[in-house]
Length: 505
Image 1 (spheres, rainbow, N blue to C red):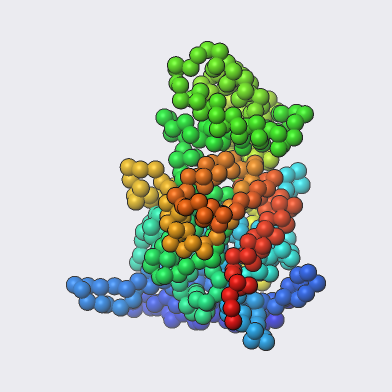
Image 2: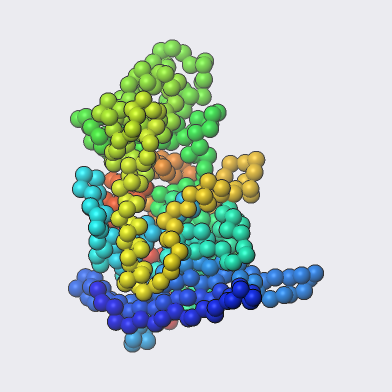
């Protein structure tokens, strides 16, 4: 990889103790790079830094101007167009992760960006110091890409005098990320480009909400939304007493994880998943719905079936009254081996300080990737992209995550399925790509299928949704074969949904 040219950021005005705080300005840095893809050289520009979000301020009905509210960090990759062949109409994808409270580091350096971190995988984790390599499967082959870190993640912060907590909630998060998308699109002359969103985890919640918000607020219709490790209906993941739905929807993922660790021998993964899905859609929810009215022989049958599908003992399943909570499962499955399994990726194993505890002390799958990604990002943006900032790069802001506001959903289940459905009904050309990992214990694939099956869209729009599955976890691209296949799947989706071959002229 070569850095050929660098443009320094605009110098910020200094402030003195007697003066007002300096007015924030964008501090973007631009560098040029090359990348070999399919024996061809791609020349691209990287633009990274913080842009200032401003809001219109009114007092007594009078316009007082634009007030700085936040500084949002982004990294944009655009393919160079020295021949003037129309790169301004090239597809552009706006990407972010979730949490809430997560930066975009995972999609950026794990899957979509032109450079990626080498973190290793189960059984062969890379030791520090880590390395970054060119990503020949980058989404830049098919689309320009803009990675966005929401307020309080990455280097993004509230403006001086503003409250960070104002952005730690469903609506303000949509509005701020939506404003970043509008500004970037307008400033770069990309309103006529095919536009896509790519979100992971809570980023899928954000992406579904944004698809509707961008339409309603700015008249910005998207070509496609890419949902990776999906959560659109939080009730499918909420093990609150009285809500039996998650117990059934997590079952196929439990079965996949148990199969991976050899707890269900002599059967293929496909056979195990099919069996678990049938049981989770039929006898199991029926049994839970009967409560203490369930006949003893029926209950014994269910206990036996659950034990066979999860690798847990019949005694354990009987003691938890047929209801296997997910964190308990991760602590219980390999207890006899003195190991825990990962929540984000059940292929990973770890250790507890106390094997009498019900749940894992830490998520071993998160432990495995945090170090490599953090080191790579901090090196990459400073050394290769030339962006300097003394703030810590907030990979995951736990304060934002713990205090996230869903006040808009008070008294009801948190769900954005209706927003995605609305966006599809209003824009019948909107395509949706859904990616799930079979070993994902955070956003199980069967819960995603449950949500998609209940979207309020006409039958003719169901063909606008495509689903892909990978033999890995929440960040399925940690598994190299899955990463390569997923990259190809996303590229094919963007190519088809861009509609360039269907337009005249």
